[in-house]
Image 1 (cartoon, one colour):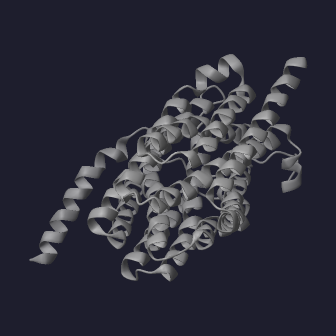
Image 2 (cartoon, helix red, strand yellow):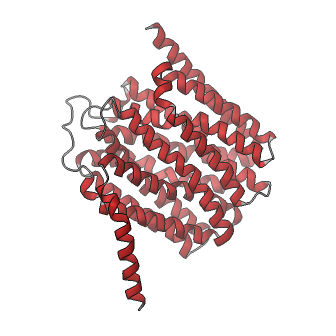
Image 3 (cartoon, rainbow, N blue to C red):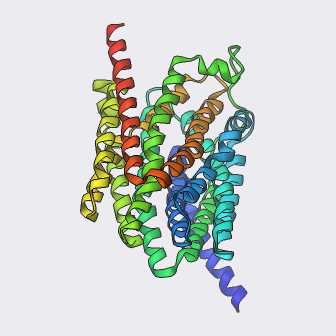
Length: 405
């Protein structure tokens, strides 16, 4: 009876998912990324709060965050070269399947050791999925539509920045941390099923022929657009990492529930949706560098006032401000990296950008975790504000130079 009921349920789920297999390719890819990002954004919240509740300090929690980026930092460019030579779908299947396994481990064996393994495996496997889907979006677009498609991708990510923390906060408060990990596993399995059902809609085959130009990583870095994309991305990741790591810790030390923390983090996602909708018209009028300079300035101001705020509504407003500032950098750097790549090396270029992102995941949480343990959270937030302000000045100067040329 159980096996028959299970088979009936699985058949019903497959029938419900079948319409996704008929979506246009770009819509299918954007749908897959949005669903999977629910698990990715939710995972960071659950790992952080579970570690804190298990007694982990700021340095240990920083190490957990750093482990998300360790293997992506080391292997992202190699994975990009593989994607340029083979089918992106292979990376998607492997990434989703093992990400589901990573989230299942803390459900089966709750404790800090399982969290360390989850962070390590989950960081690498999610990178494979992100690399493949970003390369798909670039290949499915034209120069005229590329910024718009990457903006849509980033909007989906922002939606999950709202949904993931809120759902996981509720799950933690009502079902405990291990069952929140089980929910993340289910979301990952659903993404895998959607990918398999829509496999015929996803482009495959030989990549574009490689150019006769540079063939090593150093030569790619000589491209001005590539350098601009990587530097911008590094500055943005400082704000993104420190916000997602230390805002939950800061609120937890004040005794707020996981649900309240989820709503505050969700305000960041709402702001990111708004600013990413504004990217095409704003950049068309003012240019990329000016938009980034203004956005980073806004984010820097938000971080300055966090240590003075203890009310959830004020922290929610500051999260919204920070989301406005940090939210535009990622899609702009994605489009810049893809556009800067020689033919046949687009995935490698995207992987270089991802390597910078995951390198930030390794260095920033570890360094600032040790700093936070030594001098407290206030200094961390203010130093982050200073880094963002420096990035704003750099982009403002670049915009000025472009005006003179």
